[in-house]
Length: 125
Image (cartoon, helix red, strand yellow):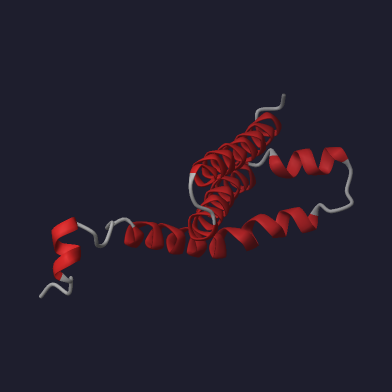
C-alpha cells in the first residue's frame, strides 16, 4: 500500500530513500566508538604526564597505533555524520552545501593529520 496523496504521486514527491542508510551508518560508527573509546583512552590515560620517550614507546606498539588510527577515523566520520544532519535540518539554500563541504573538509583534514601523526610515531620518524 502506498500512502501518497494524488498530488504527491503526480509530482513525484515522497521519500528520497537516503535517510535509512545514513541512520545505520551513524549507528554503526557509534557502536564502533563504544568499543574503540576505552581502547584509545586507557593507553592515553596511562601515559598522561610521562615523558616523550614513554609516549613514543606506547604508540610505537602496533596495537596502540592501530586502535588510535581506527579511533581517529571513526570519530571524525561520526562527527561529520552528526554535523551533516544538523546542517541539513537547520540550514537551507546555498549555505547548506557550503557548510557540508566545509565540515567534510575539516573532519577529513583532522582525521588525516591525526593519522599521519600516529604513523610518524609508529614508523619512528
